[in-house]
Length: 123
Image (cartoon, rainbow, N blue to C red; front, side):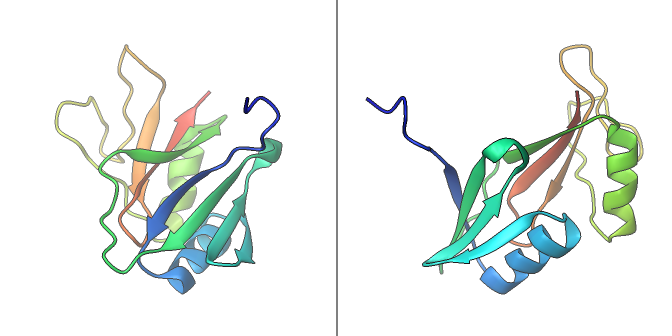
């Protein structure tokens, strides 16, 4: 039924201009203004739609993962741009926020201006 549908994901943000600056300026993604929100154009042809919501509540789970070759370099770049990394109880994270557990990839989490959780993970 949906095999040929160009599906996309979406989530809310509290401030469209702040989201545009963060995703386009800080993260360097292609951001397109669309009716009712912003489109993020991702490598490989994927897309995400960000829509404004007055009573926005940040997602408590990871809404977008960025696979990278070198998670340490990605974390350094984020930190240089003023992005704070999250630290969670129960994860073996170093002082920079990089988790290196046996059960998954090396990963670090951060938040967008609306508080949604994003991650960089080493592939």
